[in-house]
Length: 173
Image 1 (cartoon, rainbow, N blue to C red):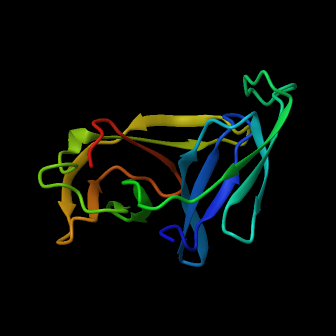
Image 2 (cartoon, rainbow, N blue to C red; image 1 turned 90 degrees about the vertical axis):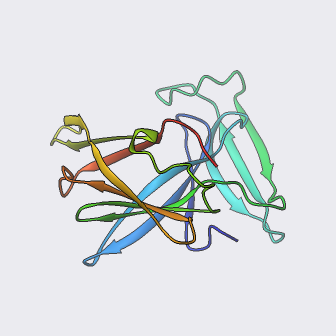
């Protein structure tokens, strides 16, 4: 399907599934994580793909330091692929001067092209694993592809080796 070549990961803290898109740059993997699904019985501990393409989701309780506020101690959920495709970001590619967002469907005319539609933060981690030098980045301009399925966000302040956080502030399709 549209996520071929990507990974799914269970999240014990939020109880959902994350979709991971990877990109190889100069021999190193980098990537981004997207919220894929929520609403499971408890924190997601394991995933198994069935022969029919559905996914079984094994859940465990939030006792301990997981942080998932579940009332249940465990659970088993099944995720089935439905027809149709949701509008979402399929992948993000980092460039020297910004990031390229690739969407599952074309943006409607006039949507998603305003730099104020996005919030981007940047930070690095120190040796203790704490975020340092957290700052918001300004989007200088946006450039949309002819098929309207990609948009480039021009960022002049990106620092190599940093984590970028992207949030769409004004949802659009």
